Amino acid sequence: MQLLKNRIILAKVEATYGTDSVPVVATDALDCRNVKWGAPGEELKRDQIRGNISQMPSVIGKVYQEVSFDVELKGSGSIGVAGQLSDLLQACCLSETVSAGSSVVYVPADPNSQKGCTIYVYDLDSGSAVLKKVTGAIGDVTLKLTAGQIGVLSFSFKGLYNAPTSVALPGTPTYEATTPPIIQSAALSVNAVTTLVSKEVSIGLKNSIAERDDISSPYGIKAFFVTSRAPDATIPIEAVLPGTYDPNSLFVGSTAQALSVVIGTATGNKCTITAPKMILTKNANGDDGGILTQDLAFMLGLNAGNDELSIKFQ
Image (tube, rainbow, N blue to C red; front, side, top):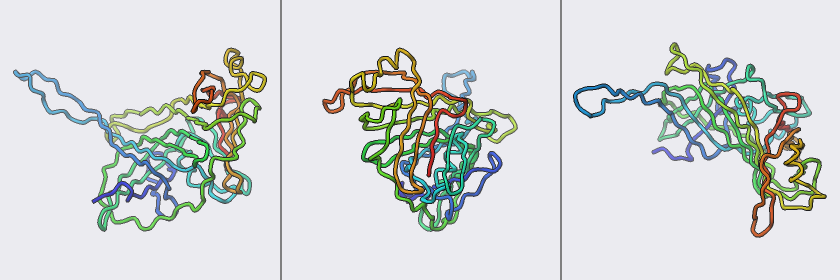
């Protein structure tokens, strides 16, 4: 019998797109939850005329794989050393810059330089396992920071189809030992205002993932790739006087605003999230347990290009 929690998830960036990077339990195990896997297929109906109105059996055309899971927001614990999020973020079309002894920074990448990753989903059984191998995985991610909780990155990937196989148990995984920072005492700044009260910040990369259909490729798909992105953010705040923060004038004036959120204080486990030019796209009152709120939604615009968002660990 296979149990939902009795699983091991591995991920590793590919040197060549679609080529199994062979992640291993010693270095590539993910601490994650809410794991979902599926293999969607395109049903091809055969609506031929056969002298009756019965259906002919369908056949399955293109097949690929989907996998999604949630990962805690945390650093490696060592400053200037990439952590378990590295391979996942790079597969979401983010570039990684490692400055030894200083920081690890992720910003949007040019699609021509995007990387895929290989994801292994091991479903453990009695003495063996079923391996669901996803190659060429390209993803999207949403970050949610909720007061008093652990920050969460929700990833969703599409990748090339490989038939699940029965394999030997992969061994005992080694997980990142860092304890994630709690979302408290965070430094939030919106439009240079640092006194706003907000119960959560949510940021979505909103990648558009397309497939490259190919008659010469197995299952009719050569690759997945990011064709565009439309990052956005939602930040509900307790309503304040216009002299402190005036979302109405910022909204009608399409005024660009900068965002900064700093999570954690420990060396190697501090995360700073910034966006240089947010534009308000929704400005509405809300109710949080009787407290009047401004429920704000933003689009994240470019400054110079490929810089709508930055995630920095230090």
